[in-house]
Structure formats: C-alpha cells, structure tokens
Length: 305
Image (tube, one colour):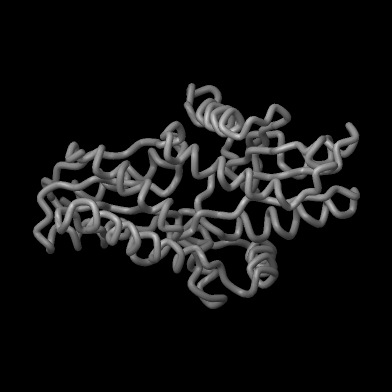
C-alpha cells in the first residue's frame, strides 16, 4: 500500500524563485515587479521558505507513525505541486516500487475544487499519461476529525497563555485559511463551510465564544478573492475596541511564506501600528502527535483500521 503525501512546494533558494513563480503561473513568467515583491517577502523571512524541508519531515514522520501502527504495510511517497519532487515523479516512483494501490493525502484539512481537487486531478492526469492502472483513494478533507480538532484546540489554549488574564477577558480568536477566488461561491464549493465548521468545533472544544473568520494571502490577480482579509479584520476589531487578538491559521499545517510573512510580519506590523496585541497559534510542522493523527486517517481511508 502506497501513501502519496502532497503539498504545495516552495522555492528551494533565491535562485529558484523565477522558476517557482513561473510554474505557479502555469508557465507565464512574472513581471520584474512581481518577482521583486516575492523576493522581498522571502528575504524578510530569511531568504527562503522552510516549507519543502518541513513537508519532507512530515512525510518521513508519517512513515514512522505508520510503521509503528501497521508494521511495513505502507510506503510513503512525497509529491509536490510546484517544486521537486513533483506529483508526477512520485507516481512513477510508486509504480517502480511495485505499489499495487495507494492513498492520496493532501496536507490541507479543508477541501476545495481549487486546492485539494486540483491535486487529485494531477493524479488522474499522471496515471493516464503513463498508462498506469493504480487503484487509489483520496482523502478529501479532515477538518472535522476529532483528533485534528483536539490538536488545534490545544494550540489555541496554549497560545491564549501569551495573554494576561485581563487581556484574555476580551480576547478575540480569528480562524483563517488561504483565500481563493470568489468564483467558488457560484460553484457551491464546500471550502467556506468547512472552514466555519472546523472553527466552531475548535471554539466549542476550547470553551470560547468570541471568535471570527477571515481569509488571508489572497492572490495578486485582477479577479476578486474571498474576504474579509485578515488585515482588514484586525483593523475592524481595533475600531470596535478589541485590542487583543489570537490568530489561528487553521487552514495551514506548516510554517511557510503565508504564515511567516503574511501573518508574522505584515499582519503583525498592522496590529502593532494599531496598538493591538496579536499572537498566533504554533504550526504543526512535524509534531509527532499531528503525524500520528494523519497515520490514523491514512489507515481508515485504506480500510485497514
């Protein structure tokens, strides 16, 4: 049984930015201004994104967790959308390894046709391109999984301790996920509903009642993206008299540009300018408890548990 772990990928180093950005834009090279903006954001977080390295650790940790639960029944392969090793390469590696069937897992808890759905489309296209007959099952989403909710709730309660008891009295928690083009509303896409439901479950588990939802990291395109944006939400809260804010990027499982820059630098600067004390929950990255949760999901999806 194979396990295909998939994630977005990132530029490997500053020299890889042009290739990476061009790949994201479906082969269209970015303008010098667009590339310069991306380079600035990467430089602000240390010159490169740790996402690919973290994803590799997550795949290795998932392999260890599966071995502990099910012996040698599973073999984990990593496929990235915009960086090596690409999804197509991973599928060929599975075929060469003699994998007879596999579970596909995207490292994102909420489903959208424009996110998780595109990863599954790439699997289908790759199998057809190479004339491979490999049965597979995709794990569409896990935003309601009780283990996942408990892990996020623990992160929220842990982060609340960064605020004094007086600050916690009017603390507002904001659940965020990556924005997508507003066209998903016309398609009846489940993404917005899944974000809201996962936030409600975490809030209930934490015993908090003051929370909101926002979107972040919208693409720099002409078409409108989902809102409200996290920065606008922080500004709105300040205008309402709320100066203590905890951001829970529940749609992300790893530290990367959208967390380390968009939240920790850009949004934090706005918060400071407004006199808002802002903190965020810690990312899961390669936390063994998170990887154990994923291992249970894989086993359930493979019908071995």
